[in-house]
Length: 232
Ligand SMILES: Nc1ncnc2c1ncn2[C@@H]1O[C@H](COP(=O)(O)OP(=O)(O)O)[C@@H](O)[C@H]1O
Ligand SMILES: [Mg+2]
Image (cartoon, rainbow, N blue to C red; front, side, top):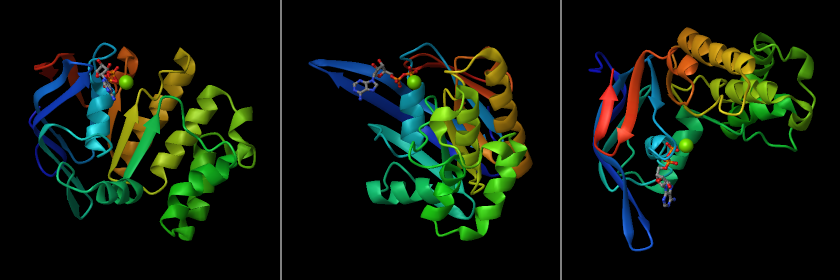
């Protein structure tokens, strides 16, 4: 996969090992790839192959041992591998959306408050109406003032996707976003994620076990073993 035009994500020579007692567990070895603006990438591979590690390194949550991660998010360039924790936190808050397998909604906030949260953290009250519109588009217009606990898994994940999209960040990272859903809900959430991202020209990197979800992405990065990847 040779990305053309502007790359949102550029990874070069990435290495990551974990220490497990006295053993070194090799996870990522000399990984390089790029993703063009507005495109989607599915990261697949067996459990333990490093999908979450890769997403966390892209987000600056986990430090790599070597290699470069460069993100171009709108007008801003980020060298994630050399940035401070504080800089990466600010980058995530302002320029990135993240969707987790287990939704990670705030239980004490309503559906609408959850979706507005990233906007509020960025002093973007002008997006208050857009949050309502997005939830309506996602079929949750009747659920604005309920708390996450009364929602089904599929509904909770739709809220989480709406929350990640509200600021229209140039990049969304999603870590097994449908891993906890049945087939019908999984398809619905994948539809909303890929279709809305395409409309808004948001790039998506999605780690997934689902063939059906992976098939929706423009590109595939299959992690077989450290140093053994297939890229299409
Ligand atoms: N914080 C950590 N400390 C030690 N080992 C870890 C840590 N996080 C992940 N690992 C190990 O790294 C490998 C990749 O994990 P992970 O990225 O979670 O894979 P995946 O998301 O594909 O299931 C696994 O062997 C896992 O046990
Ligand atoms: Mg994982």
